[in-house]
Image (tube, rainbow, N blue to C red; front, top):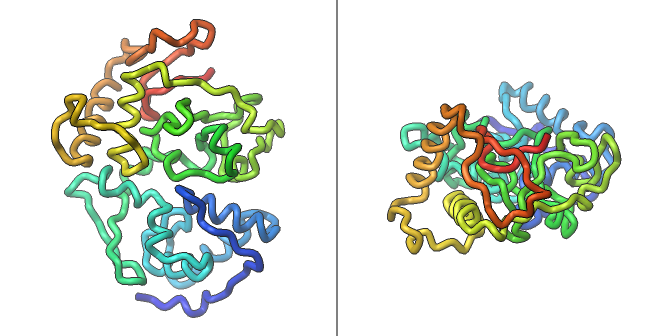
Length: 281
């Protein structure tokens, strides 16, 4: 392993802790904000350039090199394993196909299965995130569970996740979620109206199953509802294959419409790579 001893510079006077279920980019954003760095990407840019000088071309938000994990451990005070579990790699055991498995050895000696690069489109980008207004009102940070495009609801608050500013429809960035405010219209993101899903039993079961398969907190009992007794990896890939097949049905505008929804909040729906959820115009 290449040494990172020339990168042992700790630019932060104030440290922040990794919050429950927090994503790594959210932690880095809060860490930068707590130390009043301007522009906000100053620190990540510095370390990315330092890694490049060593011939390491990696991203801090989802590293694939042991040296990057070593650097982030020095930067944040967290273990490489904690850092890895706050990235897309957390979902690798379920989402990777068996023939695409790739692992690295972390600086602490643990093996880490990497999420395959062909799955990048199955996660939301840093400038196109989603969130639950009630979760954000409780604590201002981005949850790892909001990354996969297959996840469309918040199980805790029984509502759909929102993917745009409720006032101006601007896409959501990590900074906006951490600050709870739209950078375009200054709207309070926690003031958005919720779209409930608790009265949709089948849709609720589907999303609970997805949570469970991805290793996220869920109370679903899949065996009681007739699903095959197979590992989560296989069940998730079956769902992914079904969705991919339905994408070719151009005449199919919706999958399931909960009859108990109030007519005034009916929204147009379509099946896209983003998953089965409302589409806001």
